[in-house]
Image (cartoon, rainbow, N blue to C red):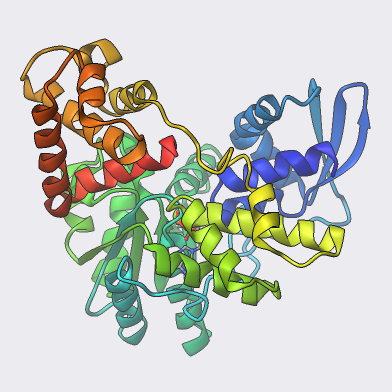
Length: 435
Ligand code: ADP
Ligand code: MG
């Protein structure tokens, strides 16, 4: 595998599936020389976008992989240049290419579990009656939980029903970039024409709008125009409307005015079903015990599960051997060194501190100040969950707390987790980063 493919692999695990596909899916190494690599990209627009928006991500992949690369030159394929298209695949002048619905993100390919059944039902209902009942539909949840997938599935299903519908799919970030470009080039009328004539507007990752006031203004008008005309709007975000910081009140209330649903991290069975389905779709022979192994070892993030599956599939096709648990163990060594990774209480304290903006020293302070006490309880809870440490050992790590205090803290967090969704999500996130 060449250096660029390694970089791509890294990027695939970090970017959303669709942005990876859009920007790196059709790139390939052309030449490597004296620490410089030359990468062919499908068009000039892609080259520009990578250089302006993604070069940071590319270079951090280079650093993480410790590749001896000092320069990356992107070269646009002249003959391969594509015509810009909108969500329906119709040519559309002046906008970036390839922001289409991902053909793999369909309802058929979506696994429904307890974690996402409401979001799924809401998405299905929107397909039945677009623009009427649940408008806007606002889907929120953590990374890799299938929000984009569901949103595309609605777009795809509506397109199948009425192929004349104008489905416009964009990300909040792209919405802003296009707006800025159009402002600069005095083409706001084409910007309006693009968005305000949509029959269905899908906007991914609206949390990005936080703090971007001018973009929020523009988005507000777009939103109202479509909403008043009873055109369906679907939004996704990493958090509920009231938790997006820097979002103006009028947008916040618009976002919450329809139906807000969340997607939770998948449980084991759902993860197994997802990986099984992916394998089937890709024609990969995946024994049940390997599906089980992957589902237990991979974090709650589905994207990672997919990455692991692809790695196995590649390995199996290169070696000609069938996929086995042993092969999976070997391939996923980096995820689970020596079978199980040892997590230290110190690393938990650091991670929890990072989450709450506290230093390890602050977190270990003997104080009952709520600002510190709650994060400390969370850290103790995680120490119990993720390390083999006993209660007294955990107590010692927190400036000598008595083991009954530790037990009480664990209890509190355990109970809170059932009721407080934000806290639950936060703990899930911490577990993911730690494991
Ligand atoms: P998000 O937008 O929430 O970050 P995505 O929709 O991009 O996540 O999903 C990440 C990957 O995981 C995609 O390849 C998607 O197909 C897959 N995925 C997530 N949830 C499911 C599910 N319930 N069923 C099937 N695939 C899923
Ligand atoms: Mg997404």
